[in-house]
Length: 594
Image (cartoon, one colour):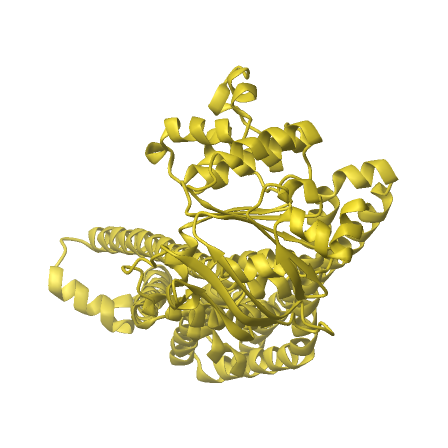
């Protein structure tokens, strides 16, 4: 259980204080449980012994204290007192259970939120390296870890303290019998733990692995549903999902069997020990009344000890099963904490000025595990309010260059400067001045209004700005003809819109915030020629008012740009107007003719 030390990394100082408080409350609950069990002894003695006041000091003290009028009145009052004790005990334990579940729920919420926040603020390169299905699995693991580690820890501590208290009570009644029961339980528990610990850890690893795979195959199958239907590949994704789902559920099933199996042996064994012990005393000639008292106390104690032992073994098995998931969550939280700590240190009050030009100075970028740089020693200058084009064949480095300009990637060598200032020094301020339109637009399953005003609370959305952005994107007439206009729900990833409509909604999103820099990364690739011409006419109205960077395969898209930068194999080959490049660069001319 040394791995559990890592678990407490998830708790801050306040959380650890809460756990200490909870431990005290659990001890109080165990004390109440013990008093409830101990109260059975004087009750039995009242009805089984001829002179219970002489045999039980507590009954004698209470009788002298309250001096009842008759024996029956004393017995009735004592029974009512025991009943009230049990009611109070159960109300307290119910409240304690509520408090425990509240701690588990709140901690699940805080850690899952912290982890998701860390993923969101991680740099773009982090998301290039990690499968989104794995990140989603890790967030879901938080809830599982709280129920596989924290709640079982509470159960273990609660039942262990109660079990210890019950053994103390039983030892006071009959030491030898108690030691025999304790030895048998300890031996069986030790054998159970040693026999199952490695298997449970392995099952926990398998559960974590196959849980992530099921999420991955759901994302891939449903995310490419068009291709799946057209190519008839339903069986392929169905088989993959079913295989990993079966293994995930199978590992959980085996964990459930192992964690619950101990009780079937312990219940039978405890009954044999108690009844066997009582039979031994009877054969030995013990007084039947003494045996009845001892038997009753042991029976009540065993009735409480058996589920106590079951829950302890369940808690140990569950914790063992959850350790692999817990270690994954702790590792991910540590990564996220570093990001969030750096974020807290950043200052966003100073706005980066953009009054003159953007410059790339000898910029080089190499993706991890890539053989060659995607961008190598590129230097260029973009004047404010100019319109420039980045062109080249597939793999030329156009998108990498746009990611460097927007700060999504940090160059390995060189600098990206705005008015002489490195954008990494005030990255958030710089990115707030950018409108970005990727080739593949992601639309939320929300209204057109929510998609254009992406990330803005509905009460803060300015509809007049939305209509202006839709008009510039050449999609306002389409939206006005819809029954619900801005309130129209577009479906998951805009499934209820055509490809061109989705793209124009994405362009409107980029324009809604009135950005200083507008980057269109193959943004017109999904549009037909007529729509593209209309959109380029609209974008041309922004010329001289905004800085526009157009990344395109089709050279007609950049025909009206002030400057066109021609890239090949990550290097800047040439630059000039569209016409001058056609005249002077044979490769560019060949590309245009193609």
